Image (tube, rainbow, N blue to C red):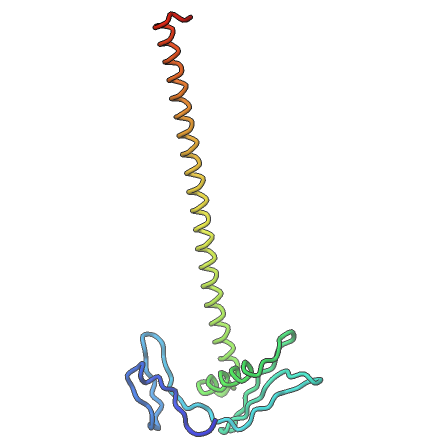
Length: 173
């Protein structure tokens, strides 16, 4: 990428930063949105080991570089590597002397934890719904059995009453 490009979040915040040399920080609800230049990229190199692509290094025009290397068992993806390098570069802007890797990794872990927590809540909700469904089924079954028992008891009472009536009316013994 060449030239200055701006992240246009000004429309959301009602602030225009295009053509400005300042980098304002705007608060939307509780999220801080940072306006900054897209990085000018000097070079992108793919790291290879034993004929396999295993990572990517991006050299930025500001003299910094970021790299993303696959872990054992991962499959190399250039787009993912570039995205991770850019994320690290953005986090390095805010880091106190570090390269941004730790902050980027923390952000990724936090995002994954939020997703896992949400999935756990969804799973817990499904489990509760199943428990409620089962409890309702058992309750309905119990009510049905009680109703059948009452009906059977009424039938037996009617049979007994008819039997007594028959004895009285016809003199059956």
